[in-house]
Structure formats: C-alpha cells, structure tokens
Amino acid sequence: MTPKPRMLALAAGVALMLGCATQAPLREMTPGERPSEETDEAGLWSALDQAELSLQRSPLLIRDPALNAYVKKLVCDLAGEYCKDIRVYIIRRPYFNASMAPNGVMQVWTGALLRSENEAQIGFVLGHEIGHFLHQHSIKQWRRTKDIMNALSLLQLVAARTGTQDAYDIFDVSQFVALASLYKYGRDAERESDTEGFERAVKLGYRADQGSALWQGLLAEDNARDRTKPSGIFATHPATEERMTTLREAAEAFASAGSRTGEESFRAATEPFFASWLEDEMGRRHYPQTIVLLDRLQERAAGVHLAWVEYYRGELFRKRRAGGDDKRAIDAYRAAMRVPGYPAIAHRDLGYMYRTIQMPAQAATEWQEYLRQQPDAADRATVEHYIAEATGAAHANR
Image 1 (cartoon, rainbow, N blue to C red):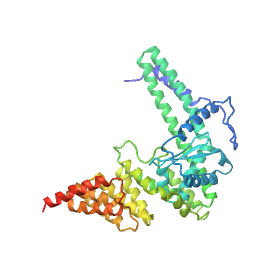
Image 2: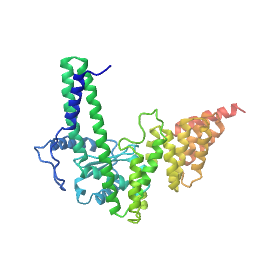
Image 3: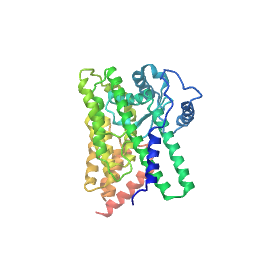
Image 4: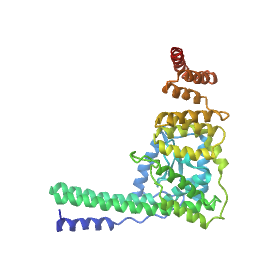
C-alpha cells in the first residue's frame, strides 16, 4: 500500500522533532559536586539514590571486605580525583557486565571478574565505565530518551483521539526513528569510553594489549552461543569486531607504554570465589559458551583452580548429555581427581554419572570414596541411600 502524502508529511515532522529536540547544557564535571536542585539531573540523582538503597540490601551483593577493597582501590587508581564520587558494588551475576550511573554507583558483575585474566584486563573494563561517568553519557542518553518518549506519548494521544489508521501508522514510523537514533548514540558513547578507559589504564602502566586480549576471548565465547537462546554472556556492552580492532590498533601505538598485568594481585583477590563463580556460570545453561570459557580458564589455571575447571567440565557434560558426553564427563571428573587438593564432590558426581549409565558398582565405589573424604557431608544420608541401592543392584546383576 502506498503511504498517503499526509502520513508521510507527519512522519517527517516526527523525525525532525526527534532529531532537533533541545537539551539543557551539561554541567561541568567537578569532583565532589552534585547537580543543582532546580535541574532535571537532580531529579534523576534522587531516584538513583533511592535505587542505591535497594541495591545495598540485595542478596546478590558480595560483601567480602577484601574483594571490595581490592576493586575499589583499582577504581580509585583509574578515576584519580573522582575516586570519592564513585561507590562500587560487586554483584553476583554470571554475565559479563559493569555499569556506571551518573550519581556515582558502579556495578561490577562477577561474570566480568571471572572472564578477566588479570588486573590489567578488568582495569580496562572499569576504566571504560569511568569514561561513561566522566563524559556524562547516561545523562545525555536519559535526556534524549525523555525527548523521544515525550514525542511518542504525543503521537499516541493523537492516534487515540483520531482513531485513524494513518495516525497509528505515523506512530509506528516514529518508533523506528527513535530506535535508530538511540542505537547510533550508543555506538559513539562506547567508542569514546573505550578511548578514555584505554588511556587511563595505560597511564597506570598496564600492558596496552590487554584490552583487546579480553575482547578477543569474549568474542570467541559469544560466537559460540546458541542463537536460539534469548541472551548470551552480555547484559549490556556487546562485544564487536570493531571495538576489538580499535583497542588492538591503540595497543600497537602504545606497545612500549607499560608491562604491568597485575596477575598475582588479581588472583589473590579473586581465587576464594573461583568455584562459586563457575557454579553460577553453569546455572546459565549456555553450554557451548561455557565450554569456550572453560578452555580459556584451563590455559591459565593451576593447582586447585585446574581441578575446579575439570570438575565443572564434567558437570557440564553430565547435565548436557549430548552424543559422547557421558564419556567426556567421566574423563573430566578423572582429570580433576589427578590434581592435588581436588574437590571431593568430584567422586559424588562421578557416582551420579555412573548411576545414570547403569554402572551401579562403579557408582557405589565413587560414593564411598566421597564419604570417606567428607564424613560430615550434609548429604550423607542421601548418598548412603544411593550406595545401598547401587550395592543391591550390583549384586542382582551378578
């Protein structure tokens, strides 16, 4: 159907209205300063301050003093004179994400910490968020969204009052205009924040190639995801080839800028949480992505960390059970058991694997070893029941 001239004219007017919407000038960023009470930004800050109170009560908040002190110090090193304006909250979520609100609330999700190989890599991420804060990207986008929503609300009112198909068609066109403008703005802001974060991390002496190295791993993981699933590892900030290339080219220009990675301090701060963050990752049930992540973790894992990587690889195959996964699970559990200090639960869950494939004698042996190593296990009664069941089945099969 050919659009009517009146509809096209009104649609063009909508596009012009959205593109030319005026915004109040941004305040000059000054450490320790809040926006004036008469500004719209002050209203936004008030709402965000209330949201922060809820965040402080969240059961997902990691309150470990040592980890929080470590991340906060890194943020302060990167933020410089704006350190006191930023409050850091570490959130137990398995996705790669960090965010920065205009009132100074920074969220760092554990999925980002798990996927970072060292302090330099997470430093590039945190520097990027500080870039959003200093360039006031969220204020710009909030104001832009307000302008768009006001325009769309007006068009909805017109559509409701006229009741004509033309009016509803115009509203649909305006939605496309709004979405297109928001996506374009997002790309510009990400590029600017990448540059800010890169410069701040390099200034501290971090290896310039670690930003692109992180994104390369993230891209490999995202490319492996099941496209039928609603989301991948990113809550926001999707990885793109463009961003990785930009960071790589910047790194080449600053190749001799610094050699610091901070791997030892990063491991010391995060290693107490390694197993629990891997457990959270398994809960996403995005198995192709998790396999890529486990492969990356295995390359740098040592000691008990390697045992946990192999244990969760076994868990992944035991739960997925695609072709050949039963053997893969058994092999992974056995690999975990070859590492000194391995978790005793590897025996328990290998027992469950054997039970699934109807090998009761082997299952009973693994469960018995589990209880030998963990005599006070919380699930002892359940495991003893399975041992009795498996022993009876094994005798019946003779």
